[in-house]
Image (cartoon, rainbow, N blue to C red; front, side, top):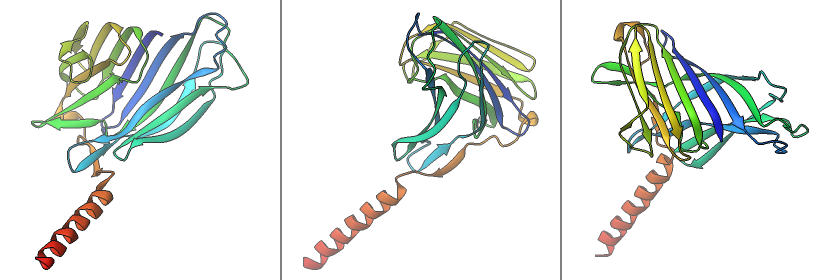
Length: 231
């Protein structure tokens, strides 16, 4: 259980995004836990032909509590088209004795912005489906220019249920959500001033299994040619 999950996104003029997550976990007294894992999606499908890449860098962790903030980063590939950066926080030689622990996780992301009908936006899963149950969450987005519009959704993937609150004024958008079930998302959408930001399209690459598909198609083609020759 996460008692709180509070995220601040700063959209820079160059299109990169600075992220700071303040996470309060409830372990229970004398849990024997050493820390926790934060998983970030760094690759996912864009369409039938391409994948999107999110470049995560400059990861650092601090804490106001007496816990280890040692970080180990590893990358895993759940499938050919998906990649996850696992940020393992904690020390195998230290356990957490307090009932709760707070961590502040900061990192930078390139490739987070996209454009819809000429309008750049940060459309982002602040809470992913792999996270545990969250009692309360807040999201703040600060941009290099004026926020044109802001909305958010919560629930299972593809949900259109609105979050508890969404508001924007000037260069800032704020969102809140009371209670997020395990497996549910908190997705935010913030429309930006086109004149205030650059690099507003995703980083797109050929789908991760493109080589396999090419081989399969080549073999299928050879089979057809062989069949035609026999006929």
